Image (cartoon, rainbow, N blue to C red; front, side, top):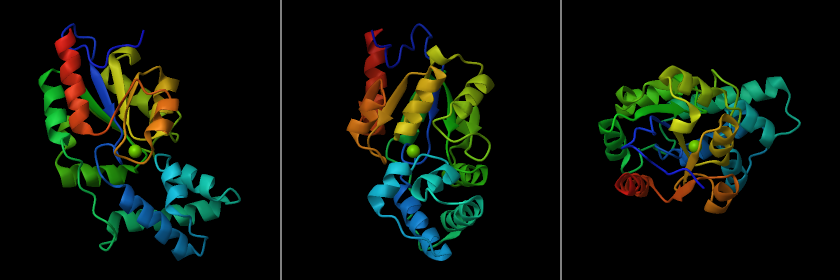
Length: 231
Ligand SMILES: [Mg+2]
């Protein structure tokens, strides 16, 4: 039997870990723009949007190696540097609003004493900038970033935030928009929920083993509410 989405009344759910890009923040268009601009800047072939959506969710070095299989370390570093400069600083790149419903969802979980964390392929600098810009930093008891851990789907960042929160996998849920989030969760023994407003389509998320698939954060909150009512 599948574990329930949220069993808060008996205290089973203690920690929800969120991916950032494409899950809480509507940033894939900026990521795609900057991956394409980085290719232009270093004189590499520009990959199309479909190819880029496929690898968003990996760490930037791992993503570059997927896009350019013949790339050497020097190429990967030049590409990653150009990408990060664009993402962090380009004023003409697409903006990155939070998805609707972020605050309501985090507030609802926090009010039930569920701990919150982030496991993201962003750099530490990128995540800290995003937490500062959105004012969401205070919600999270632990955060893990792509430059501090092996790329998803390695379970390192999820295991790290669980250790920091002091919560075991069975009492944790991972929420993400990419197959790499779901595969990371599976490697860590954590049930995962997919949201389909990000980079990967429902069929891919389903085949990667999502416990549940929701179209957006409002639907995720509603699912949590219903699960609470079921207890
Ligand atoms: Mg994502």
